[in-house]
Length: 113
Length: 117
Image 1 (cartoon, rainbow over the protein chains, first blue to last red):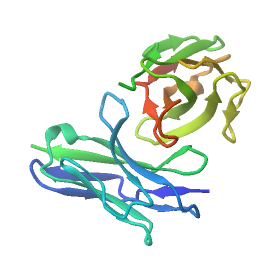
Image 2 (tube, helix red, strand yellow; image 1 turned 90 degrees about the horizontal axis):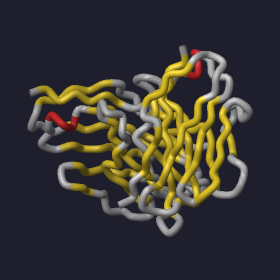
Image 3 (cartoon, rainbow over the protein chains, first blue to last red; image 1 turned 135 degrees about the horizontal axis):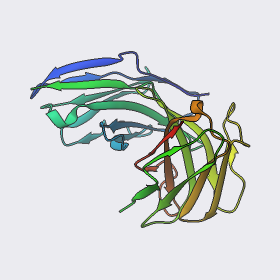
């Protein structure tokens, strides 16, 4: 079975600064996807970024980028130029052959003005 | 594109009654829909997977007789909480996977807050 671990429950960052959210996972599968989802106070789940395991290049979406270390089973999210609207809960998630999403416990990110 | 709606967004019901939550894919056909439960400040817990025209597959520990799931069409799945009790109060989220899309992509609905009094 897959597991996703987010060990930091909360983080805080000053507006305009950079923050990195950590995530590790465990799986015996070779073909899988990893995701970061954002859940703002509205509680709508928003896909931030996805990474396909077979791609070595780290995914990037505007201010969001990942550091995918497949051998170490690590998948961290870097948010550059943090904005007040980035305040939310962030979930790391894994999906493999069964197409089910396994979520980490989440981290609450607060961006300070 | 790829919009999923849920209805109602909030519902309050009395203990012992049943409540139905609808999940619709508005602009795509969904072979598979997923139902999650989320408690405040916690992660999403997968309850069940439903495929159009077949019985839902429930995760371990989820009571299938309490949480009835129907996926009658490629755009609609329903979750019925039967004989609801206060401990069933939670935030319920559905997601859908597109027929012609990636098997790894899920689109989430906005969620339904259920309060059982």
